[in-house]
Amino acid sequence: MGKGSSGRFSYKTPRFPDHFFTGRLMLHWLLKRLAHMGMWLTFEIGKLAVKILPRRFFLSLSESIAQLGFYLFRSFRKRSIKNLSLALGEQLEAKEIREIVQRSLKNFFRDFVEIGLALKTSPEEIRSEIPMRGREYLEAALAKGKGTIILSAHLGNFFLLGTRLAIESYPVHVLVNQPPEEKISQLMDHYRLKIGQRTIHARPRRQASNELVEILRRNELAIVIADEYRSGNGIYVPFFGHTVLARRGPATLALRTGAALVPVYLVRDPAGRLTLIIEPEIQLIKSGRVKADVRENTLRITQWLERTVRSYPDQWNWMTVRWQPAPSSVVEKEQRYEGVI
Image (cartoon, helix red, strand yellow):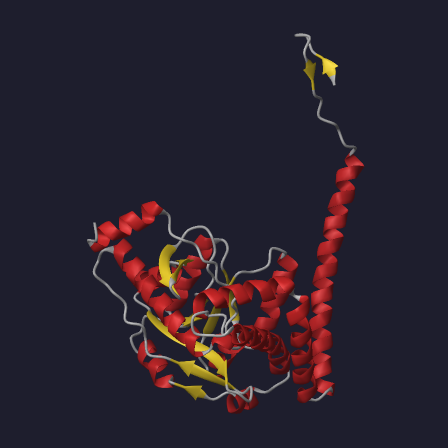
């Protein structure tokens, strides 16, 4: 603090020595390198372990970790139970809700084990272990020649969805939200490619959009996970009797390119065996009013998701949903659009 020419006290911003910033940069660089090396080492040790140890060991281990994690991961447990209670609380007892969330976490941990097993399993074995239902719907979509958007969700083992399709010689590309660290992102792309999945990064958006359009023009498959409800841009739609801000991307892309929108997901039976389910193409509204069409088709996508989650509530990640009441201005606008006021 000191006096300026006006006689008032002024505050001088402290100057940090150059080595202070250099040290922080070096620490940041070191932490990034350690994270990258740690992830690489985890994958490589996992690949080695699945070659040595029996499959049942890993499945049993994942189940034990999930049971422990249910109690240790307090935020996951509380948020998932809250979301499931809001969605299905009128139909389920508190004990049932808790059990569903517990099975959901068990499913999630098993997903990672199955990724590791897929790295050492032949395509023929994966094909025989994971049957496919509804292939005719995918073939019908591709016959139109404008590409196919594979609509999926954080349901069952969504990690292996592209792998199972690639085994059937479909050209598969997966849209992903990559981690901010470039080295880790590259490493994850590397392992996805090992199990037959080519990656499209969701950022930057314009580049991702151009890549998706080009893929669909070649009449290939683009996998889009459509259940990431976050703040920001989107469309307010009803979901389990409440409101979420849904992504407009899948509907916009389908309308822009003419690509078919086909729901596909991998789900488990009670014994833990996976099946690839391909549903009929979602018939889109195409009135020519772009904003209205995007809204109505986003609503159709959300309705599909709700029906599917109701069928497999213990295989969906209940952490993904964020309920967001629509602002009054949006509600009034929609009411005017629907002729209510």
